[in-house]
Amino acid sequence: MKKLTKKLTYDAPADAVGAMLRDPAFREAVLRRQHVVRGSARVDGDVVTIEQVHSTDGVPSFARSFVGDEIAIVQTETWTSPAAAGIDLAIPGKPGEASGSLTLTGAGATTTETVVLDVSVRVPFVGGKVEGMIADLLGAAFDREHEVGVEWLART
Image (cartoon, rainbow, N blue to C red; front, side, top):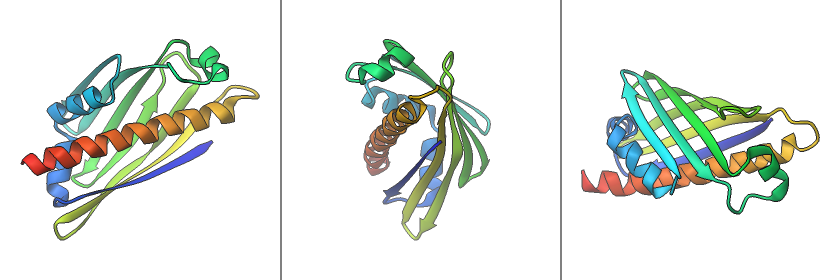
């Protein structure tokens, strides 16, 4: 299992960041910035579901044999309060997954979003390498989300 921890800071109060993270238009903008092959975002009450398909161009050959030409990820966030959500990521058709939490901590006009995920891939011999690759992919995806979020909040 590989642990991924990301701390993303926004110059906005926690309620504004939380509202942004539950806005499907924001999530669609993030998908465009991530250059996904296909993607969609929907919000149903306290549940945010993001489906995304990434090209595996540039993925090492050992991992490409595992994931194929594309890697699909379904991210489900279940918001338990305005500042906390459980996160589950599924990789349909593949023996991998991630789960963890997202928390928003406000300090005045600044908010830190902390994402903690445990990435697990059940493949003999190369599972650890693939976990690292997926953790890196997810880390880069959260970095793109942060970039879009900073711009989004600056416009509101």
